[in-house]
Length: 319
Ligand SMILES: [Zn+2]
Image 1: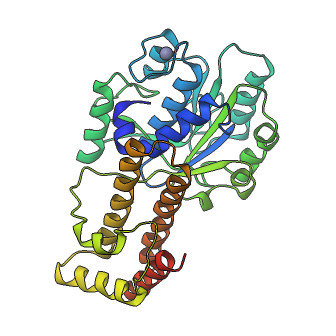
Image 2 (image 1 turned 180 degrees about the vertical axis):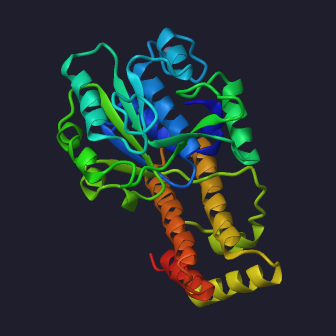
């Protein structure tokens, strides 16, 4: 997988590479989380390792790898309200559009066909988005549409406004029983934004938004030192420490939970190099990272910070 993605998401990239080699990658994947650009590139990279003529290494220059990076591979298709349209609807992925996609599956193909479903628009990017965009552009990646002056094609999350239940339902059968060598990938903020019938037929992966912020996570060491065990840690001591640390340092609660996610990502990274095959531990770390996202969402619903910290502390210490 691409080096930039591997550095950010080593555990996920390793999972996808291993699953692809063992031929047990699901044919319908959901990526959820707040950064659709990273999700989109993860989708392209999965398409690349599925189609590579060689061993799928990050710098492979075979024709399939090159075409996928350049976003002009005939079998790797982005489906959004502004990409690969056969009709005039501008605000949704239409039923007609989905049917057009599915019609192409009638013919067999030598390629592994990958359909990346997302919302998308041409927009001016924020500084952070620009940084990510140029980082990948410099390593040879192109987006489905060229830049239009200062506007750049940018993916966003699917929801039921841009992918209606009628359109989504029209592809359920194909998701359930796809022809061989076809993978569907859906990008979204929350799994809940997609039709439950798609979610239940797919394998979902939380892609954390790893910013280039330096997180000072040393305050967590005394609690996570024996991870995944939390022996002798009193959940109420843990939660009141987090709250006190946040208040004393004038941090936001989200930053504290970001630090916990970052700490877990670092444990995952270390375990890849040390114990390459420690799948049970890596699965647990992955679950915990996904779970911490739920605690962040609790903050958005104005649940008191103290309650969020207590829920988090009881989760970790109560396993
Ligand atoms: Zn290749």
